[in-house]
Length: 457
Ligand SMILES: [Zn+2]
Image 1: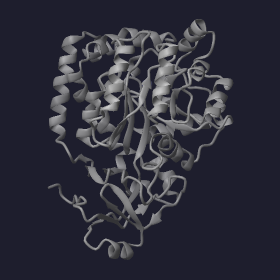
Image 2 (image 1 turned 90 degrees about the horizontal axis):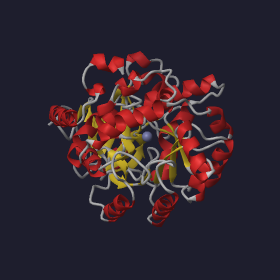
Image 3 (image 1 turned 90 degrees about the vertical axis):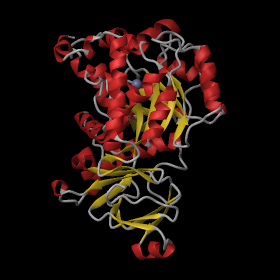
């Protein structure tokens, strides 16, 4: 029994005394109680009336906390924790880094991965996500069975996609893998917390016919569709040479610009490309920190002028070393400000919650409201973030991940006083160390060896 931790035992759980950010569109929260039962929010209102409505519910005093919806990290590769530090070791002047990093580091290490290693290698980034307030990760990688198991073990919500690419990469991932992936999706065997998406790696690595098939499968099953698009200038050049059209036009012609599509990076997209995306209703996902490290920031003014739907992701530990989405949002606001655009806390709230929720699961996710899934985060209102006259602004610009104290997913606490609830952290650490040692035995990369070799990369 963890000290002070109360879970819903079937009669509900009342969270009392906190400020509740019912909607990240609004600066001020409500001073109210929130009732959770069977995984969902069943009431938000005055303490006495909820006590009357749920007389047998457990009662938890959360005075001096702000409760906000769990954040949605719209683009991750959680397994790539093992590359942490690689992005920072990259030469800031090397403009050819895109292909050299991918071919010299990613592919050899990824070739050595096995389905058995994936689960344990995914733990660090998932723990990082929970401790910085994200309850949901939209993930894409190889051998997704392992990622699904890691998410299930920790209690993270996931929308996961198996890597499909028939024109290159460290593992064969063309038609045969797609056939297996279709069967995997149709026979889905995980908890409802972990859901499938269709994932096409990128425009330069997926052929037109396969891309078309992936899009039409996603539509037929009403699944989200996830893809890197125009992620580098190199990709744009390769696709222009091969197809005589931009990557975005290529995706459009293959029918994958659709309302439930999540298109990531768009670094080399031009205004016409963004207009195509806008017309389709698809969601654009930016990972500004990762983009700066690996390529460059896209022209943010184009995104704001064309009024694209925007979400944020942290990408992978190989580029952005942390899964901290609050940090990403603050960075986004600063980068936008440099372009003379001012992003309010409620606009940042839309990017880390509402827009991704509309694409992934509009009925279940997207805020603290009766009927929604109980995915929430309790931020400790410490003296360090006083005064609290603009609480939502405080969350994004001053509270930061260190004040994330408790995290609930599906109505159950998965992080309590920053400790993992469902699993022992030391056990996970041991499993990760074993898997990482095994990976290092299989592939000899300087990044894995010592600090010295890191600096000489
Ligand atoms: Zn990515």
